[in-house]
Length: 133
Image: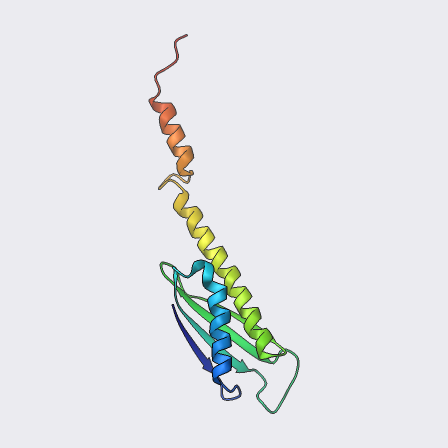
């Protein structure tokens, strides 16, 4: 999985920050690492460096997932660390939801809307000879 990190001109992208972001992202997608091919992190200061205020740091994560549309999450917080952690939590939940729904669809019998186990049981019942009276 590739991780790409971009910062705006108000956030200094030093090596420690990059290592931290990569670690948080890898932990967040670890459960689905075989499906996630690429994650981009965009870090920024919403108000600019001259101003400070509540929830002025932003982290946007965009994940590319094999077989699904790209998904993006954003979190704003008082510090960059909290914004990164919040966005990573949201990404984990979004991946769990999207990939869980996909697994549910795959388990359904094609074209019937029935679960494959139910469809198999129905086919077995149809093929069984009638019971003698």
